[in-house]
Image (cartoon, rainbow, N blue to C red; front, side, top):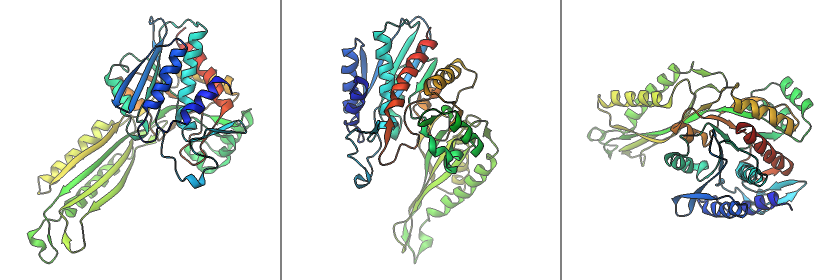
Length: 411
C-alpha cells in the first residue's frame, strides 16, 4: 500500500463523527512535519482542532485549499458491507465513512502540498491548506479560521468536496435533474468518459438561512380559554404573511443555481389537548442565491414579526445559521485552469454546474466576498449513504490535479 493510500486509510479509522477532529489534526501535523512542512492548529473546543499549513515564497497570490476533518453519522451498521471505519479496499475502492465526504479530498490536498514541497516546485505566492472542524454541523472551523484572518488575503479557494458520480448513474433521471443535464447530455458525457466516474466542476452553490420564530402566549385550561393567550394563533398569522413574502421573491433567479428555495421544516406548539398553548415554534430553511442577499431576507422576516407584535403578538426570531451562496464566474483563471487540467487528468469532459448544498466556502466568503471558489474533488456527491466509498484511482488523479492547478495559479 503506497503512502497516500495508507494515510487515507489511517484517518478513515479515526472516528470524527462526534466532534473529535483533533485526532485528524494531530495526524496531519505529524505527517506534514515528516515532510518538512510546519503547521498551526486552532482549537474550537479541546477535542475540535483545525489546522493550517502554508508553502510558497509569499510573493504573490494566495491559493487556499479547504477540506473538513469531520464526518456524518455512521448509519445502520447492519447495512454496511464492512465495518464503517475499517477502510476496506475492494476492487480498488476504499469503503468507509468519510472516504468520499471528504477525507479523500482533504488528503489529496495534503499530498499535493507535500509533493510540491519535496519537488521544490517554485510557487510565487502562498499555497494555504486549511483542514477544518464542524463543516457537517455548522462550519465552526471555517468561521474560526476566517476570524483568525485566513480568508482576508485569499485570492482563490479550492474546496476538495466530492464532485463525481459513478458514470452509470448519469442514466438515472434524478441524477440528471440534480446535475442539470438532459438525457442527450448524459449520453454525450458517457461517450467522452474513459474512466468509471463522471466529475463536475461546481462553480456555484446555494447559501442557506435557517431560523425559528418563537411565539409566546399564556397557558390556560381549555374550558376557560379567555383567560389565556393561544401562542399558535399569531404564529399562524406569521406563517401566512411569510408565505406571501416567499411568493413575492419567487422570480429571483441565478443563471446557474436557479430560484430561491424556502421550506417550512418544523411546527411545534402546545403540551396537551386540554390546555391553551403558552408556546409555539415554526422553523424554516431557505436555500439562498446571490441575487437576493440573506441580509435582505432577514430584514423582511423581522418586519413581518414587528408588524404582528404591534398588534399584540409576542414573536421572537432565532437565527440558527446564515451562510452565503457562492457563484464564481466561468471565465476566471481558477475555473478555466481547473477545467483544462481536470479534463486532461480525468480523461473526460467537465461540465460547470451549481448545486443546492453548501460548503465551508460560505464562511470564507462572509469574510472576503472577492474570493474565486470552485468545489472539485474525489468522491461521490451522493456520499452520505451506507457503504460510502472512494475510487482510489480518482483519489490519485486528484492529487496530480491539485499539484498542477496550484503550480499554474502560482507560476
